[in-house]
Amino acid sequence: MSRLQERWSKIEMVALGIAVLAAAGFYWKHTSEPYSEPASTSSLLLEAVQQGDLNGFRSTCLPAYYQAFVSHFGEQKYRAVQRIFDKAYRYGEQSWREYRLRANELAEAQLRRLREKEAQLAKEAFTRLSVDERMRLIEDRAGYQKFLTEAGKAALPAEERRRAAALQAFLDGQETEEALQEVWSLLAESDRRALVEPSALANTLTPAKLAFIDSVGVPQLSKEEQQVIRGVHRGDLANAAAFMFRHGEPLAEAFLNRRVARFAGSEPQCKYPKEEFEGSYLRGDTAECTVVAATSSGPVPVGLSLKKMGWTWLVTAIKPELYQINW
Image 1 (spheres, helix red, strand yellow):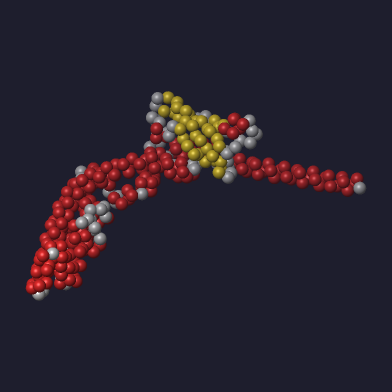
Image 2 (tube, helix red, strand yellow):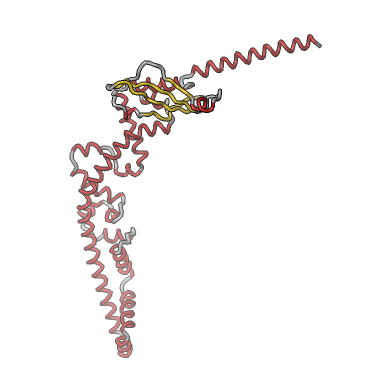
């Protein structure tokens, strides 16, 4: 029995040795990975910054932080483009108002003609009544007005009733597709060519209206302002976050490519808040690293916050931001 126990003891020792070697190998492999430690991730980020490598910078950051960093540069672009389009709108809006005023006048004139025709048809219907019926209505003012209204509408052809209703809706601010189309048909051909679509007449900010205003306003901008918005559509401003990110990436890359950022040669100094505050042997999943930026006015401490995602440490914040440092 003792020999059997001795044999199992040897097997257990061998298995334990293999397990220890495997664990050591796994730990060595893990710690040799580029993002396996806060210090290694921080070093890779500093290297990417100093080399002007935006892709390398992105690989060391949590996506949310990378988007925020890039969007900082895009926000400046967004504000500048927004100001210029607002200026173009002011230039083009006056021209749009002239077209709208002309459309209103045409709608009022056409509606007036239809109402006059309706009134004439009502009077004709009244004359066809018997003397007694006419006398009765004359004595009843409310009944007389009701008869004229109903008789006029009934006598007016259906197509003209439809047109009158559409014109009235347009003038009342009910800019339905039918109402806009009816007024559109009254415009001169040259006006329709300029406005392109009926919805350009709307008081609301339809795409066609904005396109017309920009077609008039943008050419009145300075060459420098036109250069800033070249390749940008006003509609792109509707999604501010997407705009800032899309236009911020090339600007962020240009910032890094200036390669003005320099850091002192010492390795990042990292600590773990959980370990420090709780006295735990487990380091937790957050870390704070400090590096020193070499600036024209002297060394500046820069803090990097990191979070462990699975087996990888990624940067979640940099304080102060790189673009806030006077390099």
